[in-house]
Image (cartoon, rainbow, N blue to C red; front, side):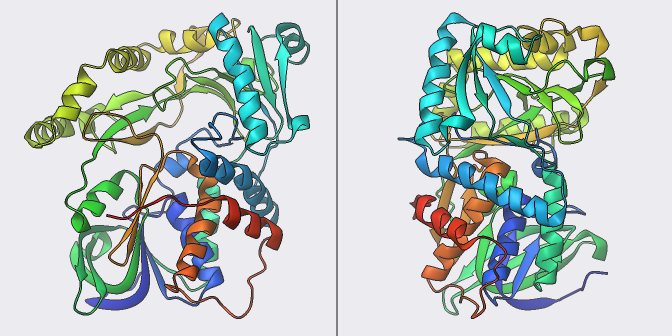
Length: 458
């Protein structure tokens, strides 16, 4: 049973029990003696996006090494971190590799570009190579494409299971995890140099509880912007939400391919990928995700979306920074994407047909069971442009992690290590005299050196 407080003092509060917040609680508690409370609004950690994804540990060949070097390195080291963690915890870590295929002639050069990017981002040549159509047929007879990029250093896991294990490890390190707790107020008290948080615990009839702490880390996913604005009202961003949907393949397709198959994304300027053919760590085959626009970060069903639709429109219209919204709505490429993704959501046949372009043996009538849906939240700036990178804001005894989509779960451990050692360097936390020794020291050192957080100080 969880404790009930009127008020409590602690060193660090981490808001958000997704994979990033949970891994942060684990790493910080392993390297320091700080008193940590992790606050999660749901009944369990990892309830939303951390358990509602493709389950892939992605190799960093889709990241431009000049523009996204740090993110690429976070994904690169993430593979090793998760492999070690899953081995210790006896969690399935399926090193199954993927194929990225080109369907159109114009995508052929993109495959070669991704090969170059992958090598520059640290992937070894023996784990990444381009195949022509005949070579693809030799390993995947049912796949049709112009050419493909074969990446062997790609794996499948259950990130929800990983997040729950991380939470148990954090508890063993004396982290206190408060579930069913939604933060509704954050204040910085400059006189005492403390953060005051107020939240309600559903299990205690919604009674308001206060925590005073030295530092907060806001890693609350789709809620992160709302919480950040409590301390930084001038932030000029807006959240837009997209639901990723999946269809489960029947057992007749179990041996259709040996690899998960991705296609070169059609909309290069937007942070969405076309639906994939996914082989999960448990062996299930699925098609997805699409990116259907929804009106809420909890918009898994029609009822929730209808309930949130008008308030969302109102909030957009009343905002003084409406120039960006107009620009986005009038963006031709964005409108094409919206129409296409909405149609994919309405029409199962249309969604299956998008994958059928490279797996022609698929028949939409064979798909009758939907997989679990996940919500992706993306920030747009005041000019209506999508922000493609995460934003790390450090000020007033707080770190806010916004727009954390990529490198996502793959890079969460790497980002957690980098943030933890940033706190150590700033003397916000003190390192334990005894090294926790849960990972190879060389891997930790390389991660700290290569995964550099680009801070936004507001």
